[in-house]
Image (cartoon, rainbow, N blue to C red):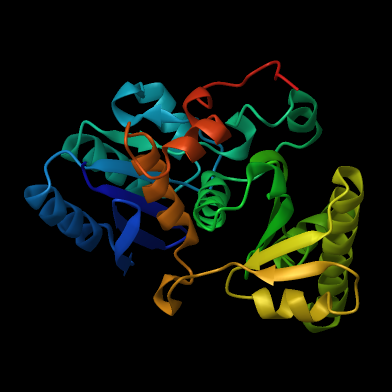
Length: 304
């Protein structure tokens, strides 16, 4: 069995997880592409042709990196810094077994109607985090029919929500940015272009907009899908949990076998996804359950 490596990008940061036979063996964080690529080159020198999976915070199909045309590559990385395209091309050169993880919009278990409702359902980083969580739960002998919850990623940029039912991703909400000053300024400028904004006075309204938006989204999704469990992870998880303490929701923190795995949910899931692409990988059943291989194009119908 070959090694699997997950590489996840978030603004100004790369995270890497190495998985060997279902067990994470290395975790790394980089702020420069040169140090990232140096590490990957060293690993590939010792383990030729590892399975590499790149996870990005944008809409992306599941696809072998070598299969991307130049136009498709530009469309994928066009809104991201130029270094992302450099990493994509480097991964493709390092291993013939290199792939791009899919975003929620491409996952075929999400009905088309839900994709038409929202332009953003969640990026590949959100999908990969759920892969890591489902792998953990299935390893604890949870049945697919028992795996039903909302997964909330809480970061400084906002929150994203994925709905998991019967061990499959069926719905999602891309990052809620109600707490963004930039978004608030754009809105006010559209109403009154010459308005002078007092940032300090505006902040309480921005915070209230975020919390009200999050509360509405959670209540709506839980009611729609008749669920009551929330799994929360991310650097500002505690503030989300504190805000929801008076609700009737069942709230759980994303389980980590070791404290050093916290914050690496996306690269860990990407690496596990890579292992699941192998015939004898520990996550092969999970990859089939999520229909990752079919997430290479927008599916117009699903079997429900």
